[in-house]
Image 1 (tube, rainbow, N blue to C red):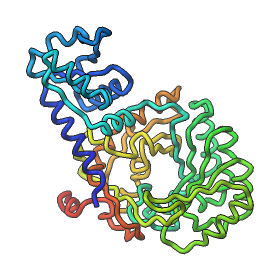
Image 2 (image 1 turned 180 degrees about the vertical axis):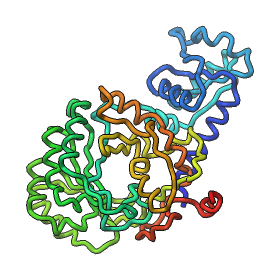
Image 3 (image 1 turned 90 degrees about the vertical axis):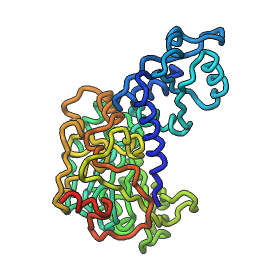
Image 4 (image 1 turned 90 degrees about the horizontal axis):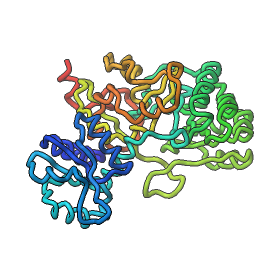
Length: 388
C-alpha cells in the first residue's frame, strides 16, 4: 500500500499553484513563515514580502496597497488554521482574492524539514558494521548488499572527538547502528569512547537482537557503566526475548523494543518500508519535503556528514547492481573542513543533489521479508528496462 503519495501530491499541487503567479507574499512573519519562504526559495521561488495586520486590526502593512490590483500576485496563508476566519475576512476586505491555502499538517511538515536544528535536537547515526546477519528486504542502509565491513575504534574516536568539538559535546541522540552493530567485536568499546566525548547525550545501540544472548559480559557491563541503552527492533524471527529482558534487568541496562503503530508495546515488527529509487535521477527537487528521512536520519561516515543513509551507503547498491548513482561533494559535509555546528545544521536542512534519485512519493509500507537481493526491492518494475 502506498503511504507517502498523498503528502507528495499535496506538495506538488502547492508548488504548481505558486508557480502560476508572478509574485508571492506570505501572510505571517514568524519562524514557520520564514521557513516556508526558505523552502520556496530552494524550490526556485522568492517571495516579495511578509504581510501582517497592524495593531488597529483594520489595516495591513503597506505592502498590501498594490497587491489587490494585480491579478498575477497571490498571498500564501502561512499562519495556523485557527486564524483562518479572521485573516481570510481581513484579506477579502482589502480586496485580496488570490489566496493560497496550505493544509495545517503540510505547513507544520515543511517548517520541520526546513528548521536549522540545534545540537540537542539532532540524531547522528554511525554504523559499527555495514553488513548484517538478518538480510532484510529493501534495507535503507543496503546492509544485505554490503560485504563484511567493520568500523575501527581509532577512526571512530577521531571522528567522535571532532564531532564533539563542533557540537560542544551536545547532541539529541548518538545512534550506534548497522547493519548489525554487535557484529563488531569491539562493540563494547564504542559506547565507552562515545561517552568520554558526550557526557550527557543519549547513546543507543540499535540491534536486531540476534546476538544479544551471545555477546560476552563485557558488552552488558560497558552499557551499564557508560549509560548506553539498547534499542531492539523485533522482527518475526526466533529469538529468546525473555532471556534478553532478563539480562538487561540483571545488568541494569535500559532496553527498548520498537513496535508498530497500533500494536502493543514490544510486539513483533511485521512490516517494513520500501524505499523507491529513481535510477534515472529525474525526481523533482521540491519533493524532498515529503521525505521523512530529511533532516532526521543523519549519518556520520568516514569523517563526513550525510543527509540520509541512502546517500551514505549507496556505494553498495551501485556495486551490487552495477549502477552509477552519483555522490558528489555537495552530498556531504566534511567535519574536518568546517568550523562550526551551524554548517552541519544548515546542510542537513537543505536538499542535496542525491535527492533527485529518491521517489519519495512511491515509498510504501509492505510486509517484512528476507531479501532476495533483487534490484526491484528498490526500483519500480520497468524502470531498469527504460534505462538500458
